[in-house]
Every structure is written in structure tokens, then in C-alpha cells.
Amino acid sequence: MYVPPHFAVPDQNTLFDLIERHPLGILVTHSKGTLDANHIPFELDRSKRDKGLLNCHVARKNRVWEEVANGDEVLVFFRAADAYISPNWYPSKHEFHKQVPTWNYLVVHAHGRITVRDDERYVRRNVAKLTHMHEASQPAPWKMGDAPKDFIDTMVKAIVALEIEITGLVGKSKLSQNKEVRDIQNAGEMLNARGVNGMGEAMLSAAAAQSQQHLSCPDKPLVLDFQRVTLRDKCFGSPETRPAPDHPLCGRWTRTQAAIASHIRNAAGSPPTVAMPRSQVG
Image (spheres, rainbow, N blue to C red):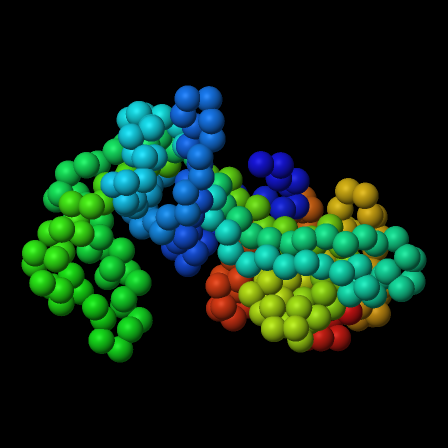
């Protein structure tokens, strides 16, 4: 996956958070010269191996478990919020007319090696964990014991478990970080007004985080790559009230892992971890 540095999500726990909040993954396998993709809910075990394990099950009639060999390399995609972004939502577009449409999103790619687990004990444990995880929020959680034993026995025999040892995680948080803060903020507000709150809140959090960074390093432009536009002083207060360029927090122009983690949490509906007054974010 192409990941520009300003969209990268390097923190493993942040990527695990996204997977756990959005467990429906797309498992991509390769067999006999063809690609296959299956949409499957996964259970993540952070504690196993170096980078964790992904566990799931498929119908026995789904031939994916027969077409892969133990140890084959596979890829699983997990996606959180996403949304179309209109250039009309960027205030700078109405001044300079140099903006185009885009699509923002938060995703994780999990690379790994697959193992087929066609044994009843493992399958039952996998089903029980997934059930407990997703029923926990119900007023009266369903459990396997609620159904007749012979019925559950028949259902368990009709599925096969898959285990994926994660060998690499790649995260991308595309929230218009290569735009001015006022553009990111206004686009986020437009999404919230349209009910697209997951991506809207993530973009507002990104705008707040970048505003905070600019306050710490006022000589660093808030945009990257093809746009090098420094925000006006009015967006951040007068020069007298801003930190000096040699402030200890000034350094390399990168987003902190905490800010990126905030973006992911916001996409899942949690409140932002960085709160900036409206007057400071354009």
C-alpha cells in the first residue's frame, strides 16, 4: 500500500485498536494463479507471537481452507471510517481555486501466514470468543449454551477455523493532513453536518492536532509536499502570544503517535484527545 509519511500510522497498538473496533476483515489469498477474497469477522489476540494472531472461521463448503496451504502468505484488510471530500469544503479553494476532490479513509493491512485449524476444540474456542466479544454489549448476551447441544455440535462440524500469524502491519490515516488546518476543520464540520460523524470527528481531531503542533513550531508550515502555505497569524493569535521558534517542542515536522491514535479513536466514536478553541483552528 502506498503510504506518504504524513498519512502513516506507525504505532502497533493504535492499529490493533482499529482492528478490534472494526473486526470485519477482507482475507485475500492466492492459489493456483488466482486471487480470492472473503469477508470474515476476526478475533485479534495481541498477546500471541511477535505481532499477534488473527483468528476466524469459515463455512466448510467455502473452499478457501482447502485452497491454501499452511504457511502461505495472506493479506487481511480492515477499514474504519471513510468519506468523499468535496473541494468546495476547503476555504482555500474559494481564494486560490487550486483544490480537487479526494476520498479520505482509515485502514490497516495485516500481512501474515495462514494455518488451517480443522479441529473441533479449536473451532469451539474460536466461536465462543467471537460470540462473547460481540454479545457483551447486549442486555442479555447470547451464549452457545442457550442452544441445544446437538444443534451446536452440528453447526461446529460445518465450519473450519483459520489462524493467521501477523508478520507485518501497515496503517494509513488519510485525513487531508497535507492541507491547511482551516481546510481540514471545515471539511470535518461539513461531514458532521451530513451525519458522516466517524470521518468528520477524525478530521476535526487531525485539525486540532496540527494546530497544536503549529503553535509549538510556528515557523513550520502546516502543509506538506505539493502545498507549502503558512497559515496567517490570525489563525493562531498574535506573534507576541505564540511560542518562540527555539521552543523545546520545535523539531522535525512529523505528527506524534498520540495524535494519530486520537484520529483512530475518533473514527470509532470516542471524543478527541486534543481540544483546540475554534479561534485557534481557523
